[in-house]
Image (cartoon, rainbow, N blue to C red):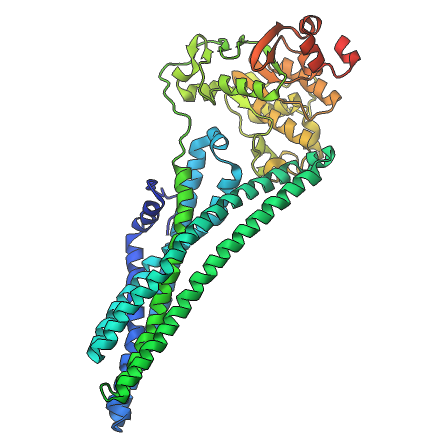
Length: 591
């Protein structure tokens, strides 16, 4: 079974079927052992009627107790050995399924890490969760075909050979009848794939909606939109339920036919064998053996139908995994070095120019326009943006990521301690961050504080987040839930800002860093942010006058283009649209 730290290998993402075969090929000996155990197990099941017929014909009917005891002992030995084979088959196939499960999880997680920030732009979180929660299990279950599935084929051929020795007529009926049963179920499996595919798609949508509800329930309640969203969720849930009923209807027919048709076939063959026995063409022992052979075949045929059902579902899920594995991160075609000194960022599409060492604000009638500009300046979308006169896409991506940080106000917060959530010190050395900020107390930066501890306290002070740490039972060592859901929206926003400040990037691009804060805290953060980032390039997207009043330059965007630039007060005096957008009331507008 794959080790937690072992390389899972390079998956074959050309198709769902090839991906399933890749999972088999990654563990060939285990799959071969499962096929061997499954084959011998099923063949010995078929041998049981043969041994019973010999016990009847050679021992019971002529009254030969020695022969009866001999064949009965052989029957007991085969049964005991087959029980052990059954245990080994089950253990081996469990390992096959677990390996496929863990291997798929590792390649999916690895792909998510590889995609990085481009993942949410290409696939919804709900679909990724659905892959991890449901599809992985279904894929691993479909690999049952390599054990009992192969064994069913071998047992079918073995029974066919045994039946030829009893009656060529019965053998012909079995050899032709069993494939017909399997073919009758085939169309249902194709229909099942279509229904299952639609069901998985709807499940991904609903999972994404659940995540949105969990993350924004407080906001929805405050805005009075909880009922509307609940109604939408209820409608989506009902559609998913209806689609689940369709999948269940097809599944029930597949499973019913998988058991019912072989049983009816058993009755037909038994009737035919009984007629031959009555006519004296076969013995009573052979009649018993024919019944036993066909009864044993019910198992392999049911396995075939079950394997077809599992493979059909596995292919649907494997295609979803393959579609995810085919996603590519933003290509890194850059070969040039980043500017050796602080330089201007320029987005020709919007006209935004960010001068080095200044605090710049982007104000947009539509907030998404400002976010789009930030994505271009941070090189998260293809553009002609430049840095120091050179196109961002021509600069090596690792250098861009090392020096330019985009801090989204909805970026993920991973479960762990608060210190882990804020993250390790990156970028700035001790000399750059060792001094406590103006206004910090000796308690904030004790004499024996390490550079990392001091930098963390500095970031928390700048984000006005010291009170968050002080209110927690274990301070920075307090365990936090995923997305810091045990904090309020404003507290999460300050933690995200502290994390971005701790990274100490040369260029910091922040999206609405204070939108969830009260006016007093917002003004405090704006003052401290300006001081802490003095001399370094910082961009904020906001419409808050409290923040805009502390900036050096403001770019006012209309339809994604710069309509006016200047200081906050200059734009208030000269640009009516800007004044109407940012003025919360007449007093703030005049001020």
